[in-house]
Length: 78
Image (cartoon, rainbow, N blue to C red; front, top):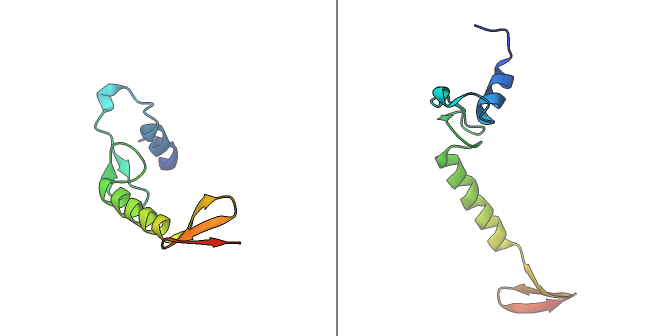
């Protein structure tokens, strides 16, 4: 056991600072704490966040031209 803080070790594993002989080192998903081997989120949490982002994106009016927004197919000027 070392006196190195666990957070620092986790950051090193995530950054790939250990040789490939330690390729099976895992660390917790930042959302649900499930063990993962790459990235910051597990597959499940990544899908949840992606779905939420797409939902939010679909609700925000898109700017189509200067000064005009399209809301549900109707252009509105400001």
